[in-house]
Amino acid sequence: IVKKRTKKFARHQSDLFLRIANSSWRKPKGIDGRVRRRFKGSIPMPSIGYGSDKQTRNVHPHGFKTVVINNVSELEMLMMHNRTYAATVAHSVSSRIRREIVERAEQLAIRVTNANAKLRAE
Image 1: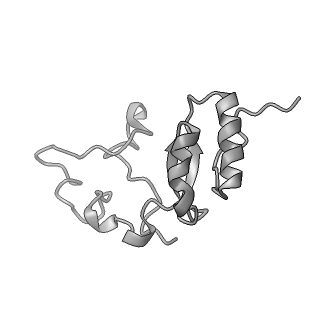
Image 2: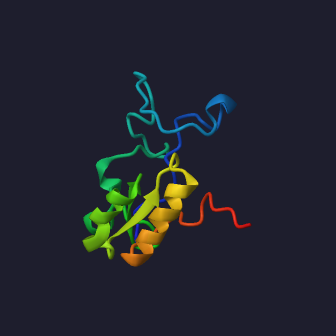
């Protein structure tokens, strides 16, 4: 999977102020802003040209797109799409239901990205 850009876009002047040092991108709106006016040598602004290829958009490095699953019945919809989609068990699912989901996913040959989360071996 080739991405055009993997580096995060830095917020304008985030290198000067510690309070915005690792904050997400905000569009500059000043009247004289160099970044907004796209001067040479200034930091790049996100634009539609940085978008990923349509075939590989939202595809994780393991080659699957992910779907968040809350119960066993939601897992059934991935039965025919187990080559393109992988299941991710939701954060709020209990360990008992989680164990059932992982067992059913094994039967349906569905990949679960966080299969061994919340499983304590005694």
